[in-house]
Image 1 (tube, one colour):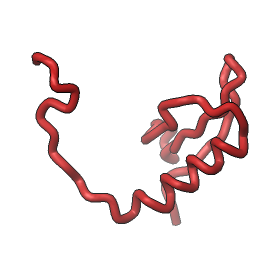
Image 2 (cartoon, rainbow, N blue to C red; image 1 turned 30 degrees about the horizontal axis):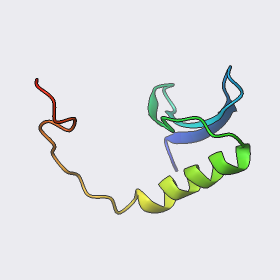
Image 3 (tube, one colour; image 1 turned 90 degrees about the vertical axis):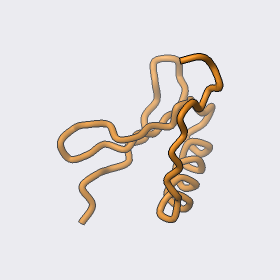
Image 4 (spheres, rainbow, N blue to C red; image 1 turned 180 degrees about the vertical axis):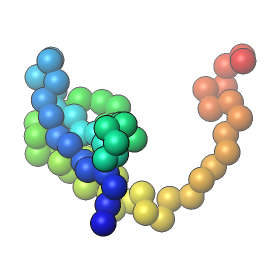
Length: 68
């Protein structure tokens, strides 16, 4: 049984977003961007669900390329 739930919601600007919420209430991940429609948001969420299980972990020291 999963210990987290995906939630779809409309933000205060009228954009659709998703977030993955652990049973303890902590947000594990979110869409990071708003979608113009619920349908597009659901498509983005499905893409994450389909692609994430086999994702590798990459250690990136300076992802933005700027000075630390």
